Length: 409
Image 1 (tube, rainbow, N blue to C red):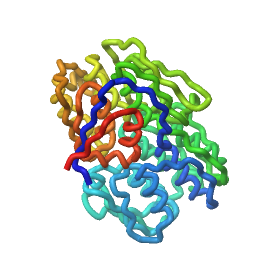
Image 2 (cartoon, rainbow, N blue to C red):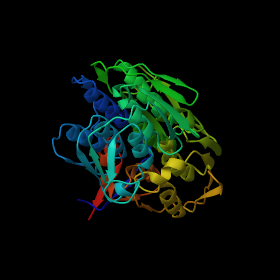
Image 3 (spheres, helix red, strand yellow):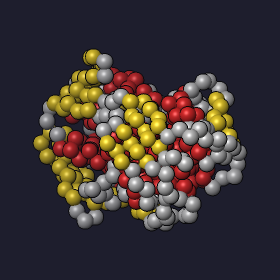
Image 4 (cartoon, helix red, strand yellow):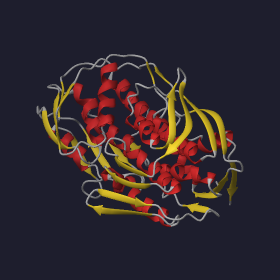
């Protein structure tokens, strides 16, 4: 297994058509709902991402010990699924997973009558889940400013509760489109819910089996937007994306319109071409935090000054993504600083275009966010296999676009 690879692009001219991987966010929700429906749904275009493949295996496992590895949605969705369906399981994960908080979700499930014990540090995996006793409680108040995955996990199991669930979201709602995605998928499988203000009401009801085709991944598309923005000349078609997407990361089309990329929708997906790039962008990533790394890396490469908010959840991802960005940007002469609480400014520096070398911190999005800089200079990416988490064929797709890859020992 190669410890690094070096990317380069001799011409800087990109003309290609790419079939993107399926959305793991949609796929993982559909898998949980399918199991909760009690009959196997017809799910098409399931993601090849490791997180989705892992969830599929675990849902079919009879083992008492369930290893969620480094997959946040897998850990959180399965915690709620096992707790409410009364299965006796021990949920474990990687060292990093055991540093990612889960207290908000566990506290909520305990209020509903779940039996969950921490096997290590209080508030963090690993967890021991036992029989569901039920408390009869139907109204919960949960923090909504940390991770929408806690909320989605609760919503998907809510129809199974004898009294249903009334969920009051406390505080700024982060990643709202992911909550809407969950509710849209629940509706697709026959469950009605109401989302008014900061209250979500899900009555007791049954899921219905249905077929569902998972859309291509807009998060994956973001790296191709960066490629188009940095290319000398570009015309890129990305297949399988929809204008009426459930995915919050479809916001990348609007964001990148400021950073030099025009999006046109077709009956097969989208076409990306170059346009004028602005020199300043202010943006709130609360609804699409997974796009932040892509935009920050691209902003530094283009010399665009950024003022950004909505990064709260980045601290508890695969790595501390804010810190990782701050470190890697320094090697480009750029700075990412928190100027007031919650408000970050990225000041681009003068880039030496001889070569780049980026660390990935066991984070797939760090690898893919910085890879497009190979259009400026040869770029070394450490631990390139991390992309398997969400986009296993990323490096092969870059080769289709005439990037040259050298694997290093």
